[in-house]
Image 1 (cartoon, one colour):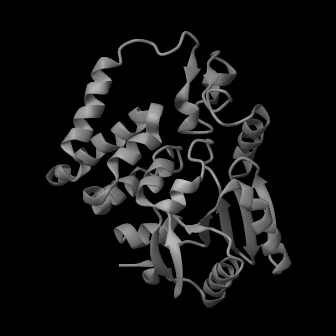
Image 2: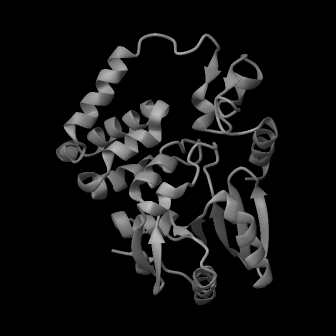
Length: 264
């Protein structure tokens, strides 16, 4: 099953095709992610009015300018991770990090990208490892990407670059372990799709990790939800794990991302 099973109106599909061709003709590096990559990897199809394109941050402003010159309304929506281009009710997300600032798009995204056709245009898809890395942290009340992670593991687990995936999660390995445990719960007959040495490594790490890693109280919940752990940082005295130097976001970026909750 592929993206071709996603039903779009003709105008929206043409918008996507035009943008893909525009970027290809300009030789600007980009990757297709989101629903269209998920459909290619896992056969999971859902209707969507947006197309997720992943780029390096240094290229984002130039791409938005290209979109504007082509007649599309464009904006840098959030300076730490997201720009947008619009045509009518359809839009394109130009993504160069994740909302929590963790999954920054770097050279490895492109080094390990997979080639595919999207609406007849030959493009490269975000690697499954990076999709798991970015989706693994999305645990909002209104959106949880755990099923996407499980479906990618189900389809790609046997061929996954597990060493690289472990490197991606790095100090956030507990998030990865959580998804792997849930995968075993979801698919009890498919546990062998997760290498035993990976599970053993993470479970042993968990067993050995009994001491506080820091004297300062830091809430990592803000990496999972921008809204549900605000009480921890606003009232309970916890540091915000998104904030530099612990994370990759500035206080101004966090404030902008938080204010936008009311308009989501």
